[in-house]
Image 1 (cartoon, rainbow, N blue to C red):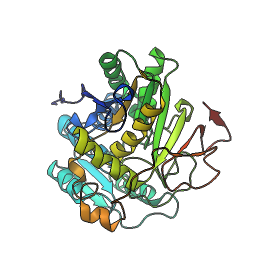
Image 2 (cartoon, rainbow, N blue to C red; image 1 turned 45 degrees about the horizontal axis):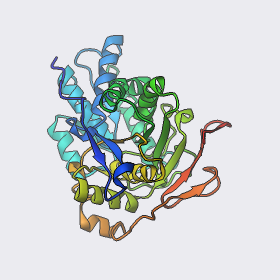
Image 3 (cartoon, one colour; image 1 turned 60 degrees about the vertical axis):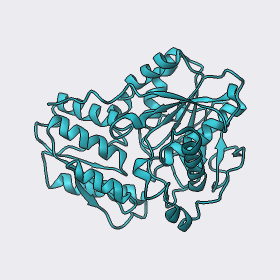
Image 4 (cartoon, rainbow, N blue to C red; image 1 turned 90 degrees about the horizontal axis):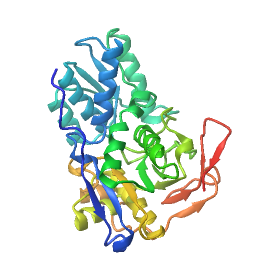
Amino acid sequence: MRLPLVVGNTPLVRIDRPFTADDRGFWAKLEGFNPGGIKDRPALHMVRRARERGDLADGARIVESTSGTLGLGLALAGIAYGHPVTLVSDPGMEPLMQRMLRAYGAELHTVDQPCREGGWQEARRRAVRHILAGDPGAYCPDQYHNPDNVAAYAPMAHEVLEQTGGLDVLVCSVGTGGHSAGLSAVLRDHHPHLRVVGVDAVGSTIFGQPARPRLMRGLGSSILPRNVAYATFDEVHWVAPAEAVWACRRLAATTYASGGWSVGAVGLVASWVARTSAPGTRIVAVFPDGPQRYFDTVYNDEFCRNNGLLDVDPRSDPDLIEHPSHREVTRWTRCTTVADPAGPTAVRRR
């Protein structure tokens, strides 16, 4: 076994002008400095814990659904612990990512039709179950519901505390719910009044909006992951693809710190939080990956033009709705009532 020592201890960079004034910036945690991105952390942790429990035998196959970043992490874990890896994705996965995963030794399956309920994610999960049925010794980490996904981010939370000395606001994207839940649980032990701002995608059902086809990868969901800790959020923002592209490209051109869809969405929201907070507010935003894998999408003019993503400048402030059920959002929108769509209660944080 060759346990990677290159995961973690990622840097922070200060982001202010041209997004905010000098005294109202935020710190970006650059998880793109991990070999594959932020999900190297849960991939290694989930595989290690499964091995310790005996759920994953030596040499057994790992099978999982992924839009890309967790796939890179599982490929790394497979190499580190000696497991073959089979990944199930869909046609939205970038060609560059497909080639990278195969280069790292993963076997890639692509589903060809979304499910009526649950979309591409449910179609991928059904394909995973079919593969597992044919290989009784195989193991699925089940990133959407596995509490080890959440626990994997405790070391990252301690990194943030050591690097900042403390913080007032955490801004992070929400997909499986892993890093928002894992980080906030540890950080609130040290800072009980920490404000947590979740960033979702337009068309995602996580926070009670109707599920729609989504162009963006890496945040949002067509299913309801059990790892989402709804009570931890003070508010949620939904961001549209064109707004994320604008922020990605502006971050790249002005700070050199950029990434993909999640980074653009988080950067847009974190900039607004910084502008509207008191000077000196300590804000940390999680940038889950770097820009390299988005050569064919976010940073490709032809792709962006064909999808109507160019020449769209976001407004300076998001729309505001009182409850996620009040209307379907199509652009950057915020809501301070955070509701669990699977339950009757809503947590009013601010």
